[in-house]
Length: 116
Image 1 (spheres, rainbow, N blue to C red):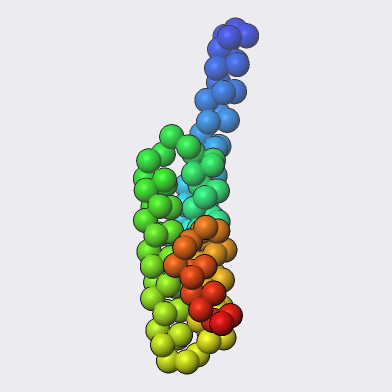
Image 2 (spheres, helix red, strand yellow; image 1 turned 30 degrees about the vertical axis):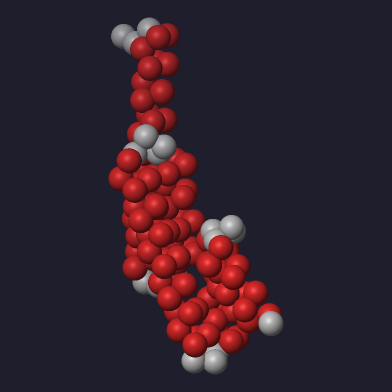
């Protein structure tokens, strides 16, 4: 027979398991989205996984790495577009970087160069 304490403990354990499952689902979706080129949506899902399972180091590391890789790839693409005279494309890529990292100085500098 489960007493009041045991019932609370069982309920807490169940809630933790549900949260872990939700975090795992968001993590898997985030990885799939970023690998499929849907960077911003994937990063949002990875952020959700971290929020739902803050103790999970794998989720935090994946978010940081994929975020950094995305920023670097977008900046490289923007700079290549700028060099080729494709200013609208460069502006779009720089703005995507700003959407991921608001204070990115390279993206801000790139947008200033386009505005000149």
